[in-house]
Length: 96
Image (tube, rainbow, N blue to C red; front, side):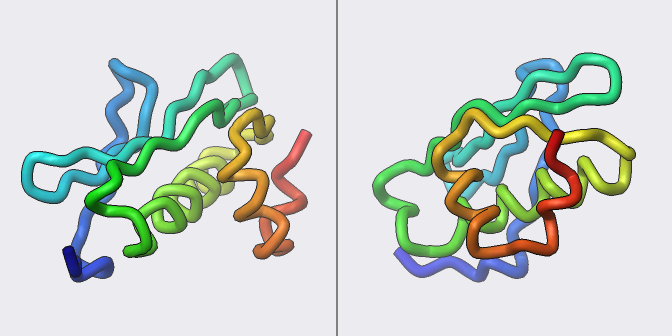
């Protein structure tokens, strides 16, 4: 499946504690918990049919920009977000 990554909106589902991107009936998500001035990224799930399209990266970038815009310090428990951070050092200053 090929998707137009730029056209896909990221939704912050605060009730479920996750950022979401929906493509048809599939939903990719990056789960988080918030406490005071800290946000912890815990798990990223991209359905198999959407893998390789950059959706996980878009979720990670959006989540880190959300932290920056809201003056939140970041704790990373998710291996995918940790890997993203290694490739994007511009977000290192957000880490606790």
